[in-house]
Image (cartoon, rainbow, N blue to C red; front, side, top):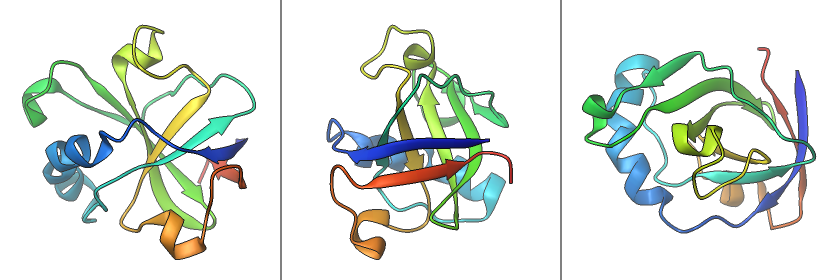
Length: 123
């Protein structure tokens, strides 16, 4: 499935949350995450059908984190979404997709807010 959207700024808290889940990611994927997310505002709502779930006890949090493997600009990445956001009670609506990876997409690809991107979820 291909999802279409535009780069958007986030809330500024991703560095802390990625720091909390990074050891779980490294164990499951063997990649070391960049401490931040690439936020994409999709054209349509998207419900993550997770490949796996990070449980609160795994990272010291209060809710599940849904994880879906994807590709952005040909690079392997993961869409992550807090369970509250998935059910409409969080800080982001269903059009916001947060992407984590081992790179800083903004720097690597010189991305700015408003840049169009495609996310592939069937890889």
